[in-house]
Image (tube, rainbow, N blue to C red; front, side):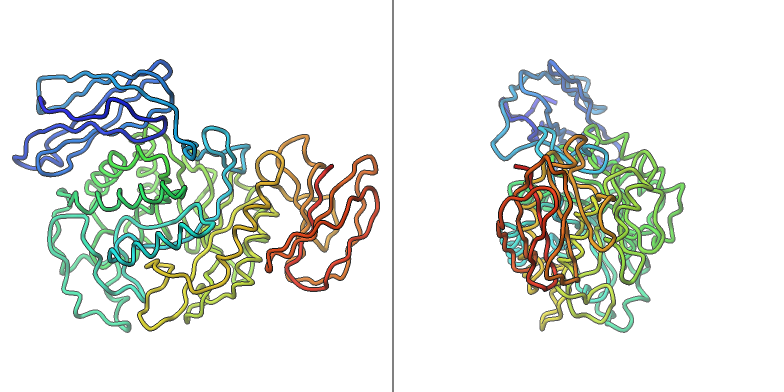
Length: 508
């Protein structure tokens, strides 16, 4: 272990890597291990390393504090232990650290900055061509999205019958020339026809995903990584137990040191028939054990909810169970699970044949506002048919819809909330949704009334007479905010008699 490479100066909450040369004989992915012990004035962290191919072994670390750190590198392929030091300086302006659960139902970065999730889903955007990847990143850079869900493994489903750009393991895939739109279900979850060595990773595949994680980080976007999913013709959804453990160990060693990573154990866990509840609990235990930074963790359903009260689950990742209602149930799920509620699938804006993929832009935006006013967070997706069958929901590339253009307005309103996050205000009229700040003691300093698909021409309010409020009329679809004066006690606010309006009151 004589050839060691590492940076002598890094910034707080950034990833640093120590690289060294080691053996290539046998199977380095299973035969060899390496780890690092990093010690600063305020923390000591032990991290597992991994084999990165071509005789290179890596250990990655993310410091949570400034100051001088020392490290000790150990392995089973060298008698020598390597020691060194490096300096951690102040983080960059837009680096706020990891996102954590804050105030039970919401999120904030480690430096205390509130984080309001405006998420989207692009299942395998990172496995497309370089041109499409760049198009996706350009769209993301111009959007309000600050979280994106995507899979580590490739995906096999309707409108997704092509081969990925690369594969996670050494080996050969099945012959995809037999696939058609009509027979794609026959191959879901099948390992037949594939020839993989599930104990030899393809490091280039994971390096590419890391480059995408870094690009997202530069845009201030959280990478919600889906570790497993059922839409598969390569056999990755039905690997043996030891191969699953090997995969999760490798993933956490490679990705944990990136501050913008979230772990989603599965997309639609209940469709992965090769796994049971005991398996999922084991995977969760393994991730908790292997991830020294304890990134956010969730598991996502198709039909049946997982038990989100489980202590390893940091927040609820929910797909709708009702054809119409999802955002409307946010406050019920908050009460049941006592955790942040993220509606990662509330259906997609689009026009495909499936009911989950053809709601209007207006309905998508409505569900976002409804979720926020009930103390949760919604997720976007888009599935518009086009000549090339390149749908944002899976491939990324281009957004064709209208809803995404209106999320920045919502996010800007959230930034005006005192404290962090909203909750539903129960002591209000039955025919409106009202939100107030989650923070104790700030509940009567801010009110947000949302009228959804209703269209009143005015509303009457009865608020504390000792407080004066600045009153704003919001058009959530046209993204306008009009101040209509200052009011106190009982007063009336004129509205335009159209849908998707809101009234915001801010204490003067």
